[in-house]
Image (cartoon, rainbow, N blue to C red; front, side, top):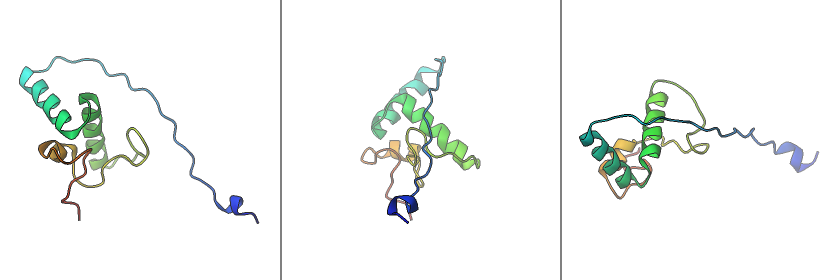
Length: 96
């Protein structure tokens, strides 16, 4: 048996577009969102999508990742990352 036959890789998940429409929000919310996204080192769209992914994962939904497989933080949250500008993309030092 060749080594290639024993090394089966997991099937690759394809990527798809998500078309979100603009929404009217309060200026103070928009300012807070842009500030938090900037502190987390990402765009407001990325920040919103990752926050939605955290909520979906917390409710028991299962998916491989948001932008890439495995990119959803296992511990910590985007909100914690936004409060700490040295943490990027949800990685916090409080993970056990």
